[in-house]
Image (tube, rainbow, N blue to C red):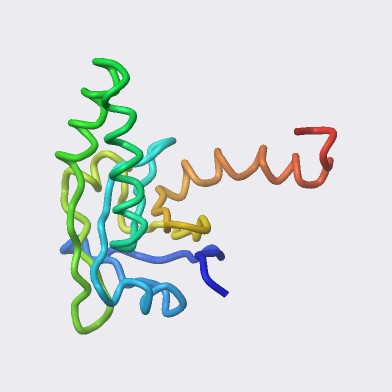
Length: 140
């Protein structure tokens, strides 16, 4: 089955390196792209999915000055990552600052990409959504 799913609690080392979960690691054998993303997390994209995202961003950039500026900042902050021999990727300081990452992180599969979260932000986002799952469709 294609796609990313699951949640993993991980740690960044002192150099800002993150070991990818074994389930996700093979998908990034051809490289990875790391970008700031919605709700203050980071998104990790395969090269194919990043290409799709770039085309979407280009289309939005043609619609208004606000979108052009957002696309500029997003593209400038994106980092092309390579896995090392231990399946680690470096998260550069500007992206760690954006997502407020310390040593503890939550890694979440979100179907077409992987998200990297500050654990406190993850809990803030997760708790109301879990309540909606308990309540069913009426809550949505």
